[in-house]
Length: 101
Image (tube, rainbow, N blue to C red; front, side, top):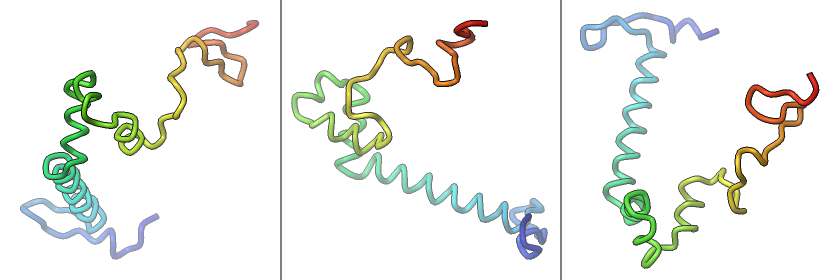
């Protein structure tokens, strides 16, 4: 699955890790720092934190819909539907219930 040079073990910080695992650790650390910087050092991060803490108050000064669209890009633009309005295409009409059997 992995190329042989990615599987070569080596000592790193007192632990024996292969290159692939070291790569995953480094990428995770970079993404963690980037997320922290965005959330605590930018105006967008400040707005996101304000919306999370007090959405009603944040609506007075922040375009909540815009920030939500940027933060959760896969969220639908239409109002949320209730869970029991959702019908699955495989014949299920809810969690653990079938239509006819």
